[in-house]
Every structure is written in structure tokens, then in C-alpha cells.
Amino acid sequence: MKSFFNMGHLPKILMVSLCFLNIVSAQQESKPKLVVGIVVDQMRAEYLYRFQDNYTEGGFKRLMGKGFNVKNMHYNYVPTTTGAGHSSVYTGTTPANHGIVNNNWYSRAESRTVYCAEDMEVSLVDDPASMDPNKKENYSRSPKNLMANTITDELKLSTNGRSKVVGVSLKDRSAIFPSGHMADHAFWYHSGNGNFISSSYYGEQLPDWLIAFNKRKLSDSLMNLTWAPFLPMERYQNSNPDDSPFEKIYKGNKKSTFPYNLKKLRKQNGDFAMLTEVPFGNTIVTEMAMATIDGEGLGKGKDMDFLALSYSSTDYVGHYFGIRSKELEDTYVRLDRELARLLAHLDKTVGKGNYLVFLTADHAASDHPGFLEQKGLPGSSYDPKQMGQKLNEYLSKESGIENGVLFIDNTQVYLAPEIRANTELLKKAALYLQNLDSVKEVFVPALHEWNLMNSTIGEFVRNAYNSKNSGDILLHSFPGWMDQRDYGTTHGTAYTTDTHVPMLWYGWGVKQGLSIAPHTITQIAPTLSMLLDIPLPDASDRRPIGEIFE
Image 1: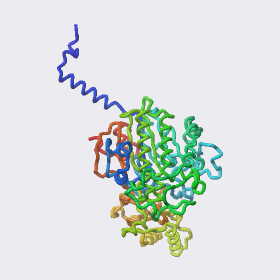
Image 2: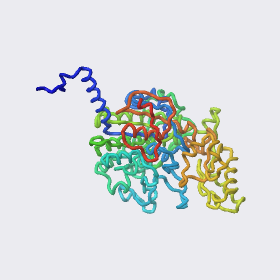
Image 3: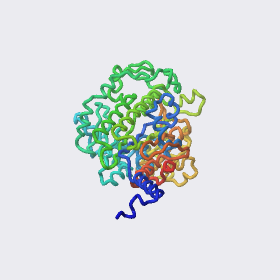
């Protein structure tokens, strides 16, 4: 006798409902095989649109046209720099909690300037001859200084360590902080020999596939190329003339124009280090990313894996040539092709629909003050070193204390203990700085009179201030002002020029769409947490980008 519950006796509407529930259940239970987080160093959100006529359908346009575009994404602290930016994206919080207040800061405990990813208890893993034992601080790297968990840490914890997590970048800090404390590997470029290297924090030996990759000597091959415009020069309509002021002139050249014969220029300009400053640095990162996917078998296991990828040459080109240079436009035209190569490799190895990609930046960048002056726009330059010298002289006269300023950069001032502990001297130092032409606002966390609630960027300062690592006085300049430089650009302010970055989502679980609602960079980690059903990082913002789920 057949059961009453035989499918032939079920009403059609119930059969359809059961099928629908099964499909929904399968969708809810599935997860991507691989998550690829891409950070483009120093990318303004507008580059998605200013250069789009020269993009292909397979790179930025694929992510924008078939993914979800968060058009109004911003950083919410100062200064906006590489170490802090990568840390904030992956911890879901700001320097106030994760502690990476800048790329470098003054350590009161050690009475010296420290590097954000420095760890003197570990060492470089590469050819031992590459490391000078007398300069270990140049090579000793780990996430030791990162005070908060990352979304990649939470992935490792949620799968009991089965998920693989790997970070790849030209810059050590850009590979280390995104991959977190529990990463399987973090690899970065050694500007001394052109290899990709690591730290003993992750293991005492490089994997065999990476040794084989380094033996290909790709960096040497790339440094023997000529950097000429990828497209005909007349296609580059959205940048300044090639022969423009405020651009770096390499040793061996008389002006800053295409083409750049790297084989001829390399020895005079840092040799392998020069690769980071040209778009071929992004090429080797793509090659390394694909080698990592294949070598580590990312996306091939039962649990989802994570590749934290960062493209850094965009930052160097911006710093040296500026945000409106032909060199920068060409770099993004080429990066578009690199992204297309990477996505095609993911399609082939992991499978369309089986991977999730997000793309953002660690900060944006501003125009050179000289360019602003030419256009009749507000802006000027200041010299932090000179500011520190003048403040030193002033404090010496007021107190008799020599060397009252221990360290100063464009946003932070670290003072001698005798001045920090003296309320009147601290007030005098702050008032002196407030009266400088470049300084719009001064913040002194130890003095309640400097009420951040009344400041136009009070929230940015609160998000930035870390009692262990931040300075005694925090500075913010007027719009258009920049620390003095002969060429290129920099970043670090709370203005939209430096805070507005791209935010693209593509692949598994992502529908096509866009949002113009304001969002902050700290919402990326909780969005990943909710998409992937893994815990929030310990200090994370709790607000995902809700529109992605609608």
C-alpha cells in the first residue's frame, strides 16, 4: 500500500511550496568558496567615473554593472593613511579601538618612532643574506600592534581554523593587517631583491610554490620594460598634459613625461624598489594573487577561504605624479585590465557564483596646493618639521625645557612628559599651534576645555584618538592645505577629498544595485559578518550596509 504522503497525492500548490522552501533553504545554507577583499591604495571614488571611458567590460565595469555600488562611502577618522585604513576595513572599527593611528607614531614607552607593523621578536623569511642584522626593524613584521580582531580572524575561529586566510600586497602592512592575527600567510614585496617574502610570525619557511614563483624573476623582467601609455595618448582626456608641473622627475630623465625606459632608469632610482612606483607593480601583485589561489588551493576546500589583496602602485604613482596626471590615468587603465585578469582566473578556478569580491580603498587623495593655486582654488602648504622647531623654541622660552616636542607630523604632536603633565604649558602649546596659518582646529584630549562636541570634525577625532598611541595634541588643517612637497600628492585630512572611496560588491549573494546613502568604512566588516554568518569582530561597528540585503 502506498503512503498517503506519496508525492502523487500532494496538491500541486503544496508541491510548489515545498520546492520553493527547499530552494530557499539551500540558498541560506550555501556559502561562497572564496572571499576576495581588494583594497586599492589611494583610490578616489571618482576614478570609477572619470576614467571609465577607457575601462573594459571585464574589470571595474563588471564589478559596477553586475554588482552593488555603494557610492557614498567615507572614512570617519583622521589621519587617513594606509596602515590605519587597511586595519579599519577589516576590524570594522577605527584607530581609537584598533590602535593603528598612523603608519608611524612615537612610542612613549620606547622613546622612539615605531612602524605600525613592527615586531622585533620576529624576522624576515627569505634569503637570510637579504636581512641586515643591524637593521632588524626594517624587516621584523607582524600584526602585533593591531589591538582588535579582524573579520578574517573571526572566519578562522568560526571554522575552527579550517578556512585558509592569506594576505598579499606590495606593502607589508597592507598584507598583514587585513589577514589578521590568525592568518595562514601574509606575503609582501621585498624592494631589495624583487622577491615576495614573509615573516617568521607565520612560519620559518616560504611554501614551495612561492619559492618557485620567486624563481621566475618576474620583477626583473618587468623592470626591463618601458612604461608607455597603454592606450593612444589622445584617449587620455581626463588628466593634465603629460608635461605638467608638480610631478616627480626620475634621475636620468630631464622631465616627467612618457615613455619611461625602466631598464635605463632602474639602477639610478632604487632598482627593484622602482617597480612599486610604476603600474607593473600591480601586474606582479595580480600574478602573485593567482599563484596564491593555485598554490594554496583557495576555494577548493569544504570551508570558505579568504584572500586579502591590496594593490599599492596606485598610491606611489599618486604620491609622485598627482591625482590629475597622465601617469595616474594610465595606471588605472592598466589596473582595470589587472582586475579583469584576476576575475577571469577566479571564474576558471573557483567558478562563477562561487566567490564573493569586495573592492574599496584605504584612503583617497587631494590636489597639490600648487595646482589649486593655478586654478584659483583655496589651498597652500606648511612644513610640520618647521612647525615643531618653532614650537620647541616657544616652549623653551616659556618653561626652560629643551626638546619639548618629541615628534610631529601633519596631524599629531607628541610632547615631553614635563609638558604633558603641566596643564598651563599644554594650553600654551595648543594656543601657539592654533594661531598658525595652516591650522584650522587643535584638539587636546587631556584638556576638557577643548570640547570636541563643538568641533566640525569632533567625531573624526574621537574615532581616531587612542590613549596609548596617539599624540598629545591633534591638528587639522584648512581645506586645500597640505604638508610641503615638490610634487605629487598626499592624504590624511577629514575632508571628502581624502575620505571618499569606492565600495563595490560582486559575486556570491550580491544583487545588482547601488546606494547613495552615506556609509562609513567600518560597515564593511559587519556586512561581511551578516552575509557569511560569521561573528562580528570584537570591536566592530554593528551596522551592516543594509541596502545590500534588501
